[in-house]
Picture: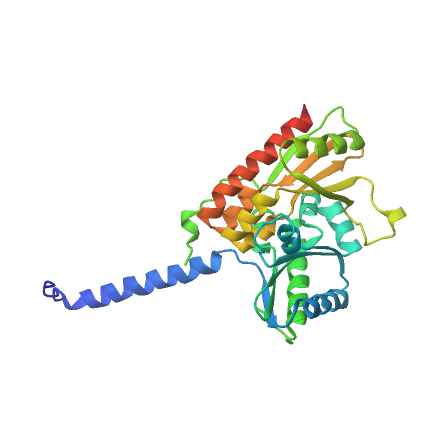
Length: 168
Length: 140
């Protein structure tokens, strides 16, 4: 048998507890926004069409798919489980030159990676986590490049998802 | 919900080794040998602007070397599909104007800190140790 609930000792205690709860919620919301997250877009389609759509979306925004890494088939043919993941690398020459000139360490992020996750009847595309990179590479040269690349990838994923805006 | 306060960033994002006495070709060969010695498979190498410009015009000062250990890759993806953000494993060799060579890699444990998955993080710490072992071997 549970003990009887203790009544609030003072009229202000309810307000105090409510305020504390509200502040805790605000903190949680703030922290969850601070938590880094990649860009993600998905739609019901098949892998072949998803590849075509990604190619078109990348080309529309000046990017070229420079490499496809079939992680799924590479693992399966070696006897491992199928992770249903493929990697695509996209790039454009101007972005490489700009990174070389302004922020050489950011070359590590190029060509940009798009992760394709194959689900039952859905194909999800996911980017690297630009926010995580921005937390360290926050200098005058790096931040605008990261912002630009993130915006480019966001636009490509939005285009892929077939939405006018806001693929997230 | 993941809360960042439990994950104070302690890892550096980039691992770097200077390779004095190496040419770019020598460093490239030593790196591929060290990758194999550490039980990884060399996947491919390319210029930073490969397939973005005609091959004859590709930059010659930066080489990207991709490599992989398939068992570790499978394990990481089974734990967290976001591990694909650090796949395949990669080193970059950069030749400066004065001819000096630098070996650079993204620290997988730093990426893992951003993902905030404790199950994945221990694997990424091991991956980082492998990267450092490869870098040390090349620098010998």
